[in-house]
Length: 154
Image (cartoon, rainbow, N blue to C red; front, top):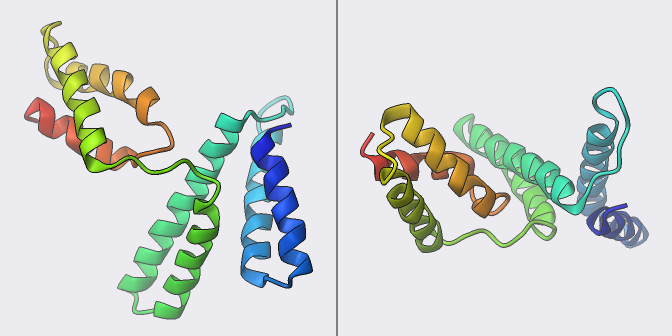
């Protein structure tokens, strides 16, 4: 079993004992998402720490998008709740990459791909293939794609 999943379970127990409703609800949701991922597909499997981080990253993205939607709908109390849940999840995710670090990785990958002579969508795919493993879980995919497009002049 993954160490992160064990930590989530321990922290859930602590949150329940301290009657921290927000943390308990958020950790329950995260553990449910992890369990759903474990049993998805034809055969149940145990998730690695990388897989758990991927699931938690998806859940964090849902919280960010929900908070933005609630802000747009003028529902600040619901947006605040989503941001609070995001804060709980952030403790288990790797530190986000700075814009400078991300830019350097993208620039390096664009330079490497430009040597092959690829253009358009092929170049975009080749750059993303190089960049994605380096930034997995530490940068938003949309932000990465936008930087790659800018780097390729698309």
